[in-house]
Amino acid sequence: MYELVIKNGTVVTAVATYQADIGIQAEKIAAIGTHLAGKREIDAAGKLVIPGAVDIHVHLQMPIGNFVSSDDFYSGTRAAAFGGTTSIVDFVEPHATESLLQALAARRAEADSRVVIDYGLHMTIGPEQMDILDQVSAAYAAGCGSFKLYMAYGLRLTDDQLYRALQAIRDVNGLPVVHAENWDMICQLIADNLAVSRTSPHWHPRSRPARMEGEAVGRVIDIATQVGTRIHIFHVTCAEAVQRIKKARQMGAAVTGETCPQYLLQTWDAYDQPGVEGALPVCAPPIRDEDQQNALWQALARGDLQVVTTDHCPFTRADKETGILANDFSQIPGGVPSIESRYAAVYAFGVRSGLLTLNQWVELCATTPARLAGFASKGDIIPGYDADLVIFDPQKTVTLSTDTLHENVDWTLYAGLEVQGWPTTTLSHGKVIVNDGQFLGAAGNGRFVPRFFN
Ligand SMILES: [Zn+2]
Picture 1 (cartoon, rainbow, N blue to C red):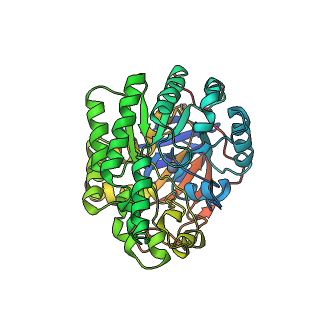
Picture 2 (picture 1 turned 60 degrees about the horizontal axis):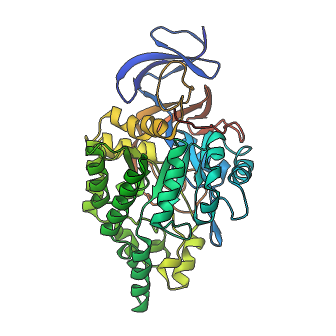
Picture 3 (picture 1 turned 90 degrees about the vertical axis):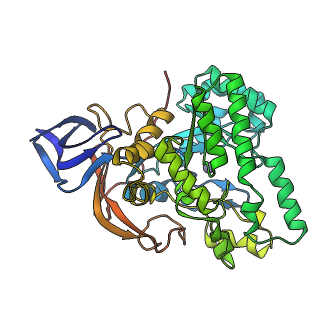
């Protein structure tokens, strides 16, 4: 007799689809079988039972200039739970005067009492950390198994700095995760456009061409290969970048890449909407045209990209409007919300369209991100793993809007989009935290999960 049994569901993992009951005991998956009995039972007949999704790229309460992303560790993880996501990885951004461990402690102090699902943290290595690379091993030992490197913005590392940071990460067996864009070219193109009064968001994607994203992805892969380290490429938006990743993988390099719902569901026409509407989709790298969108779906289907994350980083309409009022698209705070809709959106537009199998869907959203990021007991349905599970109703239709979503932001990129298939029940550590639209979890019930690689 198990504490809880999910009965009669169709279990879907990255490798198999089958009918089974799942027995849960002491927060773990204890058994997978038939005719299991529980003190409590949930009937999942007609529904899919899938691993909780793992989103290894989110920015909650993240300061950027004068703004802070509007979902905090409570509202953001709660929205994630409604969407069937049971683990996230956010970021530590150390100040110049902090040690990496001080910065980690400060970020954990913001998150630990607020999260409703488990979380990990990537440690950011920026230019100000170049003289404390000897602390990378301490950050790794404290559970930051992965390290974020930027090739853009104020945190941008030059090629020699990338080389040195990648060596330090390699030496501790950490995972480098990279924002790859060509910052020098972007700055010049922005300046060129603003100089001739091209100030509207229309010029945002045109200042960050796909060709240059491909160049930056190729460059950092080459530097990683020179160093002899694996590398994960964040938010791939175009065929040019996919080709570099694919080629490196064919040559045996340990390179992986991800894309995000905004690149799969939207096109750059969204930037041509009048007023603040055109500013809302501003994110970097930018959303591109329909051909690029199709190329990304194909890359997921063929395995040339391995992960779907969100890069969830919402800013309010008022925040976004500042760039419109300033008549300068480059001043619009970059980032969009997707944390709640990812699992269902990839099902609705990937699986239902016949492009992806059920197993690929679970692999892209849960299993591979968990393994890649070093979550030892998440992202799969195996006895002994954490009972982070989702019951997914393939018939339930949800029309995405700020009324149906729980993200703390006054807009969504997907307003009016009808999604068939939605999570009805989310379990974290064997406890039901969302059921039929009711939130049953609590702030602080999520845990910091140290992530390591052997
Ligand atoms: Zn990001």
